[in-house]
Length: 204
Image 1 (spheres, one colour):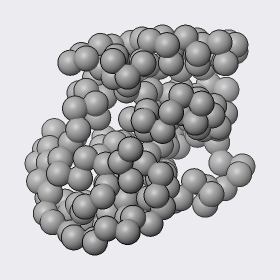
Image 2 (cartoon, one colour; image 1 turned 30 degrees about the vertical axis):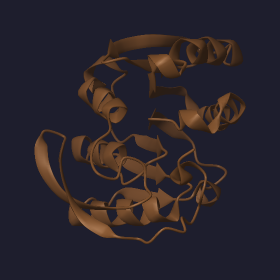
Image 3 (cartoon, helix red, strand yellow; image 1 turned 180 degrees about the vertical axis):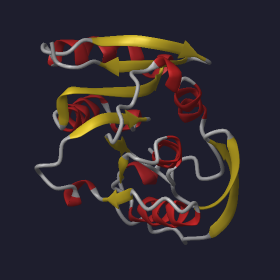
């Protein structure tokens, strides 16, 4: 298993390098490092999610949006670029990933991006939108517990969108979430390049 999935402070050298990537319709000059998820570019799953945002529930004005497992920041940064009035929380267990997201947000002038470790997020914080490329490889039980914990932070009218590989259990995950969330509907809203986008709807 890749160290970045579960190690708060990777023991590999923090070797920074420039990262040029297209986010929110424009080329961005950012920075990345070793031992963070997809450090050399935009991974396929995240690219599918960002390309299909028009197929998930719209972000309401002035929303509070949380990116669970932010890595070097592509989802959180895109959210802040597309919705400058939103309050964006970028959450990751990796200290190195959080440092990169802070640096990249600052480089883009995104002052409404709050970067935090999971335990640093205020217990009372509730969000309107959750977007994530979740860490599937941590295992089924750990993943289900993680998603239950953070989906519980959605406001009643809030929604979540997650991208998961079909061959990594997207369909079984959708069924488990649907069973775990009786007051919400879980649907597959898009599929591309072997990935599903699962959406958790508002409370009924």
